[in-house]
Image (cartoon, rainbow, N blue to C red):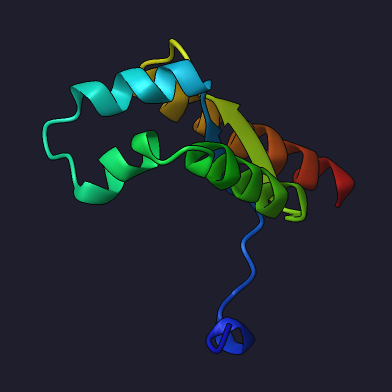
Length: 96
């Protein structure tokens, strides 16, 4: 990545995950579907490859925090992110 040398390294990167069935449901109800969205579901193996790539990137990321989004409202996910950051900050303060 050409910009990596001068970008700050994040301390937390939140990876949102859901089951394939939830992803299908979400895409089916999406109002602004793009060609790539529908191709993702129509092309055999494409979704599985995308999910595997996403998982590989996340697993190699030392800042990764995984959040499963099945049956979770956006507010609940935001609360979980805030809770995680507060916990991490408290843990950091105790190490000092």
